[in-house]
Length: 189
Image (tube, rainbow, N blue to C red; front, side, top):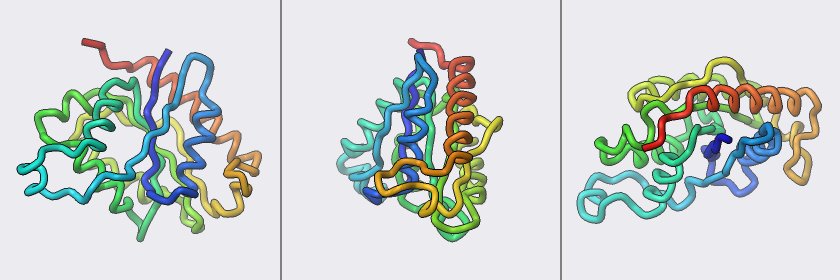
């Protein structure tokens, strides 16, 4: 049994990346679960705020969920050929204080998926995350890819994937990522 935490890199309630995470959660093989979290409510990173008040509660709660998980799946949009600012901000907060990085990230199996209404997909966004997560010590999953272009035509009004090829890619990715997580689970204290 593996528990994976996933969150979208968008704050929009009708985010295509949230819809993509729901599709991945539904495609997880038996014995594995994808619990969807949110970065909504995380303030802009401010070292003065951290020094005066510590890590904000929404950040601490998400850090604890990630630390307890067997894997992390991020659904990242692509803004201006790179990672979205709100998601980078969340990761910056999640890495505070630096002494907590090993507990939260070190050795954690990590996967990326992404959807965008544009035609370029999220390949550049997914690639832009690699230096950030390398420094955090995760184990990236490179054996599959889900990059959804033209997301407005891929998801129906209810948020479900209406394209059979995309649905199959999500299912294949979910199965492969779950197997990767199962093989590389971090030891429990």
